[in-house]
Length: 242
Length: 229
Image (cartoon, rainbow over all chains, first blue to last red; front, side, top):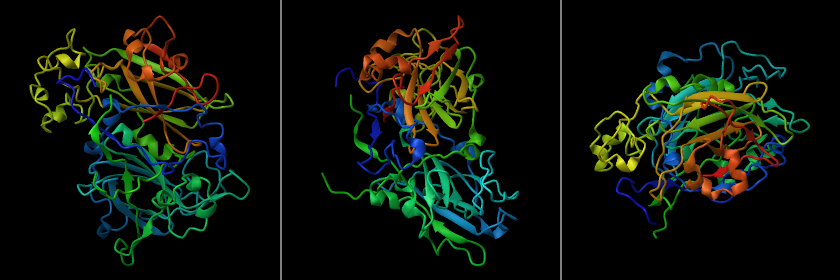
């Protein structure tokens, strides 16, 4: 612990995940991981200013009232079940994370992505691109109005279908908190056999990926509500190791 | 230590093959021009992402995070960042007098008295997808050196996240610069076994020192070093 200067503040890092609460890189049931997961052990990187800072987008992308339903749905003519997805962005210590950018993308109600590589035999919906962006508010709350995506087939194994899911990309406060995940829907029978969902060993951690039907967020005659809180890494209590 | 209940963090999941739908709006491959020209050293880094079969990865995306030419991150936790001044972090962050970059502009230990302002338009962030041949290319400026936790300066580097189908969570790595003497004593590079350090150092591809090559080799003998952060 030598060499500290007054110019160097006592920086607090972000806590490492507990065993089993994140997927391993190699998960053989997920075929694509076999040739893409690193084979050599990772090098433990003690966090530095490079990892505890990170890009912040909120000021450019502040989206106001993305879930104001009184003006009619922003998805107008899109086909499928209209849903409101809302929740809070928090850290492990239940602190709200405000002004964080959240990007989402998903398939349409038929399970087709608006992407040149998706040639699944299901119709495209010209009124639905499947992209969204939001910024968490002062309480860490975000909200999207969208269409419930359909399940879609993928060639991972015979008769493989991904459960309905929405991709979430979150820029938390730091490079270290960067997270891309998927949100699933409660009671989906495909969850049990999905290799991607099951790649996380810890059951409580897996539950974090499944949204909850939320009558409070449901708007009469308009849209069903699903609640999905997102929890990012918490801060260490003691300064960065040297 | 008191027993406190903490929330289980949300697990990572793969970006899948169609992430460009979500990522393209904020894709940015060139941020050099957003940096004040009198301080910047423009660099272009090109390379390929290659999998365990040696095949190119056409569906990968790199995200770069870096400091500006003065070694300041666009983030309030960098005490030398403008936004830190409003957060009342440190006494010496409050002197804040801007100065044209001089010989010591890169040394944060000198900043208490001679403090270059952060370049406000320079975000330090790039998002660069690979093309159908698994290639990527981006242009930025050479970052200044930033402090390590032990109070020494790190060698100039870019922090990199890599996402793709087949990765259940991102890969983290760094890019260092060729011919940089401080690489030999860098806090992070010193943690990497010597014969693998070269996977983190970009190579010159021409006499033009601004044109560099760096590849992501996901598996095998020349596998890139990845970090657990």
